[in-house]
Amino acid sequence: MKKIAVLLEDHYQVLEVWYPYLRLREEGFQTVFVGTGKKEYKSKEGYPASAEVAIKDVNIEDFDGVVIPGGYAPDILRRYEEVNSFVRQMHKKNKLVAAICHAGWVLVSAGLLKGKKATCFSAIKDDVINAGAEYIDQEVVADGNLITSRNPYDLPVFCGEIIRFLKGLP
Image (cartoon, one colour):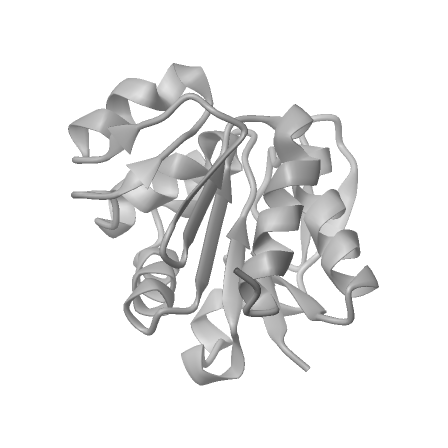
């Protein structure tokens, strides 16, 4: 069974955490909440999510992919070198790296966007472009193992593309 990390930090966008976490489980994948060190995190609206493991305790070999949700959480996540390193290593090993909305900030800090096609929430478009990406304004953009989307309305297509990648479908 493939194992997917879903990154957690305070001020996450509730749909962008829970929708992929549960949708991937429906497809038979194991999803694991990975936090930056605390046990519990709150969404922008105060909805709780409990980390199952801390980023400092994860082994890259145990995971087949990572989903980075948006909200304001990415601005906190990107401050942890363990998070940036984990995302960077996942990408380097050709494992799934999926980012939605403001999660593009983590991709910027991890140094993954140079020469890549990507999308993101419009407010961070300049950051993504300045990091070297070709910005494309569409629901989902897949560039190899990097999958990006713009906002919660894109979640069905975003998760569909993640599932396609994980199942090795064309």
